[in-house]
Image 1 (cartoon, rainbow, N blue to C red):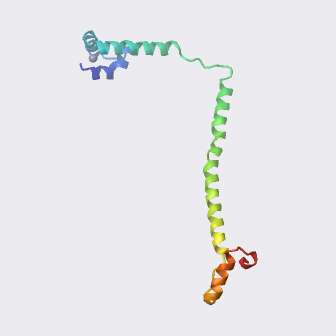
Image 2 (tube, helix red, strand yellow; image 1 turned 90 degrees about the vertical axis):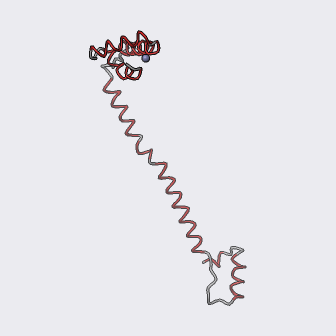
Image 3 (cartoon, rainbow, N blue to C red; image 1 turned 30 degrees about the horizontal axis):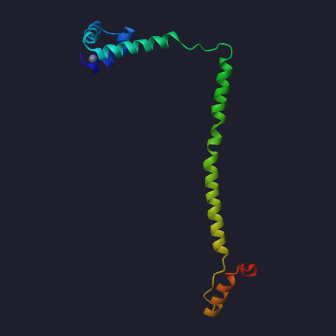
Length: 133
Ligand SMILES: [Zn+2]
């Protein structure tokens, strides 16, 4: 048996849910392979620790705790959408304001003479409110 094969069967070897032939192969292997011996020992210690410290669920307040926990999880969901919504709204507002300003800027019309157009450009540079109506 190779080390990799042993690792694949490690859990079942330790819990005893394993074919007798594979079990004896593993025993032979760990007699000769220090690395796998160490792995088997560490893994079985870990499993024992877990088995001996099974977390007891408090019988009295468990349902209440459970309910509160799920309330919190579901209550937090709407707020997760708040941030992208604010970003999207700001972007739309920015675009709207930008377009609105462009629309309201006085553009020289084609009917104007070049002198009138020049004068208009000069005057709008001063941002005279009457011209922008
Ligand atoms: Zn090995």
